[in-house]
Structure formats: C-alpha cells, structure tokens
Image 1 (spheres, rainbow, N blue to C red):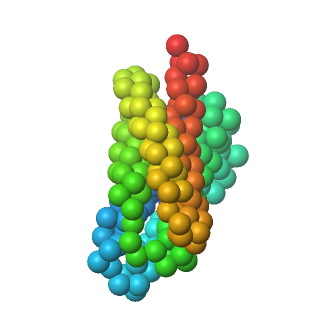
Image 2 (cartoon, one colour):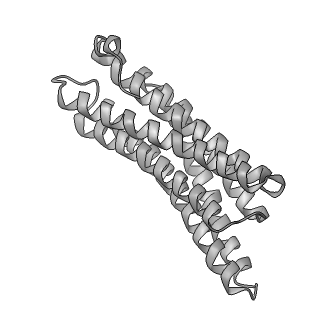
Length: 213
C-alpha cells in the first residue's frame, strides 16, 4: 500500500496525520476479523478458519507496506507536525500491535484450536474495544485536544485485561491436560501482549500531548 503521489503534495500538518489514520484503520479492521474468528470459531470449518487467518495476515502485510512508506517519507521530510522521533515511534508501535495480532491468529490455526474458552472471548472483546478507542484517539490527534478521555479509557481496559489474565491463568492450571495448558498459556500471553502494546501507544500519545502544553 504505497503512498500515492497526490498524498506527497499534502501539507505536512495533514499528510502524516492522514497516514496515521490509514495505519490504525488497517489495525482496527484486523481486530474485527480476529473478533469474528474467535466468536465464530466453534462453528467454522478448518478452511473458514484458514481464510480468516489469511485475511488478518493480509492486513498485516498492507500495514507493513504502509509503515515502510511512512518512514521513508519521514526520512525525506525536513519539517514535521510533531517530533520526528514521536512519529517514528508511533508508526513502529502500531505496527508492533498488528504483528502481535497476526502472530496470535497464526497460533490459533497452528494449534488447531476449534473451541475457545469464555475468557479468550472476553479478552478479544477488550482488544476490540481498545482498538476502537485507539482509532478515535489517532483520528483526533490532528486536533490536539479532547484526547485524554480515550487515553483514560484505554488504560482502564488494560487494567481489566490485567485482572482477566491472572484469573485465566489460575483457571487454566486447574486442568490436568498439559497440552491444553501449554497451548492456552501461550494464547493468553500473546493476548496480554497485544493489550499492553495498545496501552503503550496511548502512553506515547500522552507523552506527545505533554509537549503541546
């Protein structure tokens, strides 16, 4: 997904914010596909699961291409709307969240998981809600105001996920199936990493806001 020629002619204040929006759009769409995968997995065939995993992978590939294009433009832009280091870190951080999401989708297929625990469903609900708040936050970044409500909501959801992972691990180790424990421990740890990565994006934006005060 290369940046179009007309995009290169946009004023600097508009261009980079536009690219952030495109990047978070891809991530949010991937989260929606992941939610569909998890919520419907009990009734999906292996081919249907594979197709959804491929969809998420394609979002990851598109985001990766966009990420490279944004960084290339950053290297060729003398004046930027926010600090160059912040732009670079924000772009890389969104890409990291996408990579983690793709990784866990791949693992679900690799582990041949066809039945999902209620706690995984709750986790995915939190991830989807966080992605919506991040979408709102990043789409509002150019306004440089009214950003803290979304940041606080993301942090609140991260706290919910933190409590959920402790409860999930405790329940997991009550089972006596070692293979089941290994698979779902890995899944929970990856889900937690996705949540933490999104909270890190919100914290990064909070740091950007401090520089505007």
